[in-house]
Image 1 (cartoon, one colour):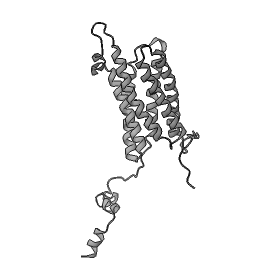
Image 2 (tube, one colour; image 1 turned 45 degrees about the horizontal axis):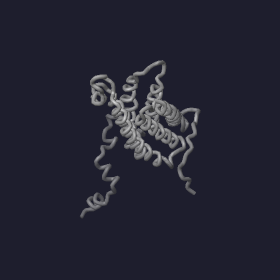
Image 3 (cartoon, helix red, strand yellow; image 1 turned 120 degrees about the vertical axis):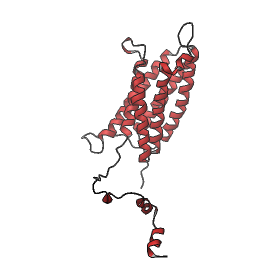
Image 4 (cartoon, one colour; image 1 turned 90 degrees about the vertical axis):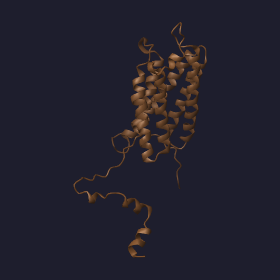
Length: 236
């Protein structure tokens, strides 16, 4: 066996990978600009916080607004697609937690918005033909839907135990918000419980905005450095 073949057979995985990659020096006509991936965390957190804020706001029927379908556009295009994109980018950067959480909550926004889209037929399936109003079964169905997300959100909360106080508190208040929403829909007169869910939602949104802003402002990008309260283990 020649020395050349022996060298080829003994190449590492990294060397083999480079064999299948066109070197920038082989393409002198094309500019080669090495790039690092931007952090998808601020997009995921800010889109999440905005969706929670708007849902909580319209739960209180501000300025006499009783139809909250205006939030559907935000939940689809920012809270939904924005978080899914952020989750995909977290996959690329190797952040399993961020990829799972952002993709999941992006899916929640899309699914929840789809419920209230007239063309989806979901509300129509629970509408009384005589009165034209949703039947009590609809509230129970929404409760079952939200209970599933409460369980998932609780799992995320435990998974964030070594992240930061900001993220842990954010997920805790999201858990509480899901709990109150599910409970309120299960009750025959749960309007006050649903209003309470708006309060915890505002707290979750505020923490989400704070944490997302920290991702944009910290690390010397601005003069501001927002503390997040790291919970990571300190190695000796």
